[in-house]
Amino acid sequence: MSAPTPTLLLPAALADPGWIGADRIAALASAPGWTALSRRARMLAQAGPEARPASDPGHERWLRARLGLPGDAALAACAALVDAVPSAAWRIDPVHLHVGRDHLVLTDPELLALSADDAGSLAAAIEPLFAEDGLALERPGPTRWYLRELDPARPLRLATRPLSGAVGRNIDAWQPTGEDVRRWRRLLNEVQMTWHEHAVNSRREAARLPTVNSLWIEGRVPPATPEAELAARLAVRDLGAATQLASRDGTLHVDDRLLAAQLAGDPQRWAEAWRALETSVFAPMARAEGPWLRGARLVLAGDAGWRELAVSPRADWRFWRRPDPAALLAEPAAGGLDAA
Image 1 (cartoon, rainbow, N blue to C red):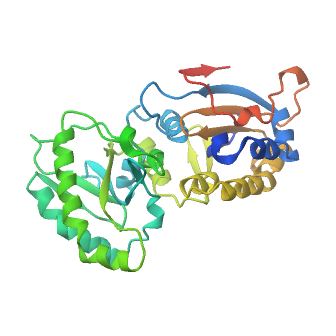
Image 2 (image 1 turned 135 degrees about the vertical axis):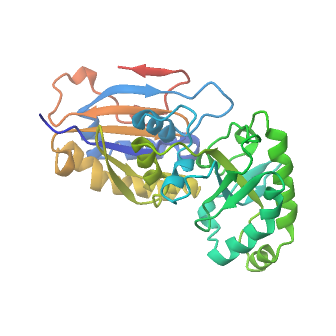
Image 3 (image 1 turned 135 degrees about the horizontal axis):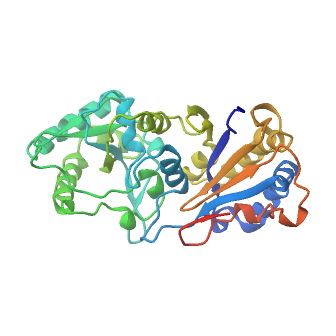
């Protein structure tokens, strides 16, 4: 039996033309490697934005389906299985919110560069607030924190949204909802007041570093299953690098260079990452070289949707069915899952 075809997931590949520039996207799509790849590509499925105020990022939606996780599972919360805190109930992250014209915007957490000592000092200041509410902080690392529910009769009943989708945006559409939203907002207000004049933030402000002024809660920690453990390894990956995982459906490659540029709000860096992929991935995939010897599945994900392509190791003689290289980089229209 032949080996499964490897899959490459490219988060943030379906970029907003208003951010990157339509002319720049068209120029990048005309590169020889990508053009040759598109000639061997066949659409398998695609999904547009979800029917709610703001869709989860396309790559997270596709990964949940690929790994067989529940539709409301949060990939970031799976990291608890790698961080050895399986008793945790929720993933929370220390973050910086800055004021826009008339709203709050979430800053890329990578810019915090929070040290272990400073994280410990900030956490110690708010631990009593959570304890009074039947919750306990777990802090295996400087920026990956978790909450345990001490009282089984008082679980947090929230529906949360992924941090990665909210970075650089107005956070209004990304706020938690649910029966306990007022309880969470009260706790969050107390945290923000406690940290407002904390010594750590005073030092950071003096050093012109972003202050740690809020928390982002994201998803319940799932039970430890093989699928959740795969998701956990993806949740702790270093952005800007390639990750390779062996799954039941074959090898899954995830390249985060485009996503890292998007989270940093740097369209020039995104274009440079695309040019690097042209050389290191698209041209070899079009030539069926290296890991792509037997072809590939290529998943292009965007802010809300995703598109999955089958890339044949041989040229498709049906030239009238070849996708347009630039059109492949457009986010799918709103709606549900479409299969070819």
